[in-house]
Length: 104
Image (cartoon, rainbow, N blue to C red; front, side):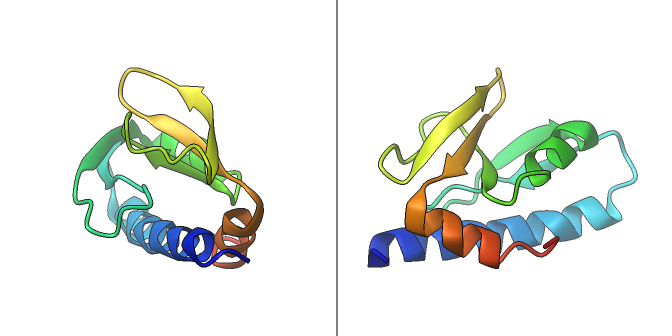
C-alpha cells in the first residue's frame, strides 16, 4: 500500500473518531463536525444535520470534507451540496478507512 494513501486514511479516521464523539453528545438536529479531510492540521468545521452525518457514516469509506479539501488521486466525490462534499476513499486508503471504522 502507498504510504501517502495509508497516512491519508489514518488522518481521516482520526477526524471521524472525533466526529463520532460529537455525534454521541449532540442533542440538536444539527452540529458542527470537523472536516474529515486528509490534511492532518485542518481544523475547519462542517455544518451537518444528524441525518446527513448518519448518511455519511453509513459507508465506512465515506468522509465529509469541505469543498477544495478533496484529494482526487486518493478519493472520489460521491455527493455535493452547498456546505460539504462526501468523498469515498480509493484502493489502499479505502482499506485503511474501513479497517479503522469505529462502527465496523
